[in-house]
Length: 96
Image (cartoon, rainbow, N blue to C red):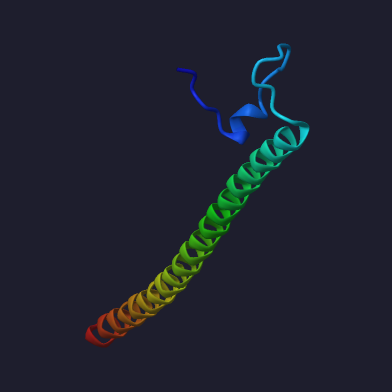
C-alpha cells in the first residue's frame, strides 16, 4: 500500500518517473501552501519579537522609576547627614 502524500509534500518532490505524477496545478497549490506556512512562521516570530520588545520597554521604565526613587532617597539622606554634621559642629562650638 503506497502512502498518500499531501499536496504540500508532493510539491517538494523531484518528479522523474511517470508514477503518480501530480498535475502542475497541484504542485503550484502545494508550493503556495508551503509559502503560506513560511509566512505564518515569520508572522509568529514577528509577534514574539514585538512582545519581547514591549516586555523590555516595561522593564526599562520600571528600572528608571526605581533608579529615580533611589537617587531621591540618596539625596535626602545626604541632606540629613549634612544637617547632623552642622548640628554636631554647633553643639561642639557651644560647649567650648
